[in-house]
Image (cartoon, rainbow, N blue to C red; front, side, top):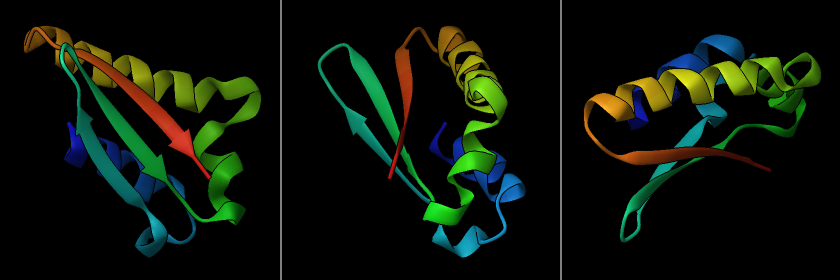
Length: 76
């Protein structure tokens, strides 16, 4: 799932080398942290958060098949 988030984010931003994705596994959930360059934050979030919501939906669909709870956090 980490690679999926990385691929989507790199396709959206102007500076794909600045994309950083980390996975944190907790007791019953997985948190995927996405960091991009400050100038690319708007491209990853989208108007009214639509792109971020779509990215979370895709990741949750993959996670459901693997019976995991996953959340995607976009950090600065």
